[in-house]
Image (cartoon, rainbow, N blue to C red; front, side, top):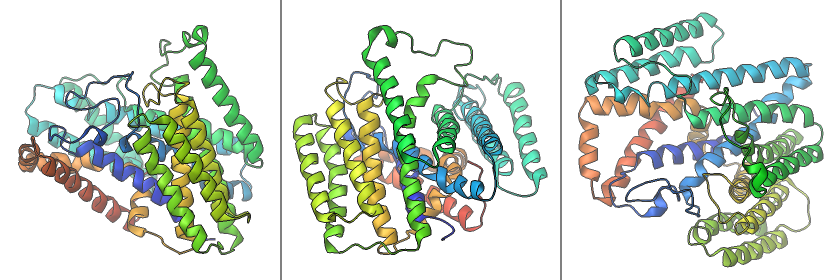
Length: 453
């Protein structure tokens, strides 16, 4: 078996690249609304929970969640085969949850709060660079535990500096919500995979159960009133975060199928028709970005159903991983579109079933195409997969290293001034910062400097 499965790393890399790019384009450049989250459109970027729709920006988080789920079997299957028990594996998952939770707290209490200080901006920029320099030894994968301990000690020291020099009190309620959700999905999704690792049917039943609970709390007013984050540990665990298992768990099923095929050593038999079917799968993903954004839901559903039928015909009756993942993706996608009017329109926040199934289906279809490229045409995309192998480095290096350095050198103010009211420079700004992130992350991967994630 190959050391790594590229298709999952590529999907994760695509998600990270999209995440950094959309966060660093010019927000005052006059770019069209589909370049931003559907619910925070320009020119005010004010959050509107009633604004239904879907843009490509709304896909980056679910694509990452899907790739996280797909990694469950890749990371844990071999451990069980080597004699690991459920208890030891659960402890590993709990450790991973703790690391991600602490990481989320560090990110929230530094990058989000440092600018509220009255200290000069150059001090804040230097502080952010110092935080990243401490995170590196704290999180890097190494057999030398003293390196991780020294990094953790540096982070604690910077916490005192944050309080005594910048006048900011670290707060457990100030965290990176994206990482907090990922931490909880990694824990509970991993535990569900452990308990259903030998039965995909049982895992589908769990998915249906979670969907039923989500539907009950979404559509029954008496139950919906019970949701919220008013209890004392809501900063650490919010039950609503578990709804994202509806993306991660289908991802774990795709991961199991990919791992099984990789171990079989069989070539993926696919001809010209199957290759055409890959374009159809990608077309179905793109159709959603048109139909659901413009709210042409009925036309979107009909077009997607036609594309699904074409995919079925072109892939024939032969059962293989590519066809199975593709069919599953279309099934999730059609379910999500059908739920759009039931949910009052697809929305990322507050997340509804239409969003969960639709984006999960889009991620599944994208994975099917990547599987075809990897196992039929041996296309590895080593640069993008290298970024996907080091997601926490990629997630932080722009905000903690590239951005602060550019600010200290006067480059960031120049980019901001060029992108003000200028679409071209608004895009260029995002390309520059994202490209530097990609190069920095790829270098870390090539040097085998992986962060625990």
